[in-house]
Amino acid sequence: MNVSYLLATATDAPVNEFGFWKAMEEGGPVAWSILAVMVIMSVGSFYILFTKLFEQNKVMKQYKSVKNAFWRAPTLREGATKLEKNSAWRQLADDAVTAQDHHSKMDGAGDEIHFIEEELENSQEKINSVLSGGLSFLASVGATAPFIGLLGTVIGIYRALINIGIEGSASIDKVAGPVGEALIMTAIGLLVAVPAVLAFNWLQSRNRRIAALMKEFANDIVAYIGSNGEIKPALGPASAAKGAPKAAAKPATTAGGARPTPKA
Image (cartoon, rainbow, N blue to C red):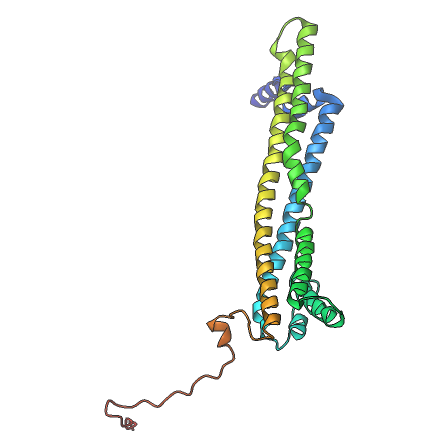
């Protein structure tokens, strides 16, 4: 008897006619099209975020080898071979060596240091351009997603007004669907735009940090070439002492200077 009562109650339970999917169905092709655009923009934003984070982390990790391997080499050419191929730091080192070779073969090329500085600046611009690739998409999503959501909002309110005009009254069952659709589109627009803007600003700040490291590395190369290898960046006491022979331990002595007699 209890089972029959529960089944009857479940059968008579009202169906939610004002949920998300119901509102989207009432919105028709326009609502679904706007939702599809929002989903594509959101997926693209997160894809760019994670790929750029991986790329930036790789560049920052490779920078450690600059201190550990590059500056310990006797020449720039040999130091460049110790860096990872196709890395930003390898590109800067190779471009510096190439610029030095080209300048030696050119007549009237001017000051060598100035020539190398210009080549390194061009290299940094190319690398920064690669690191910034895709960030314009994040900026575009952050700027346009709220307005695309607003378009859905306007359409939803317009449909609500049409229903009121047809029915002659603003009953809740006639306006709830279109108004709910309008609010949903506004919320989706913000949910897509806010992460894109935050990701854009975060990736930009990390790119500026990498650009500063590349500028420092380029300046160190120029100083090294200008001083004929006399000037190198400080490697740090721990790195400099690495590999140095340890001093032999001195035998212990007493206060009087005599060695202690070993115990039997």
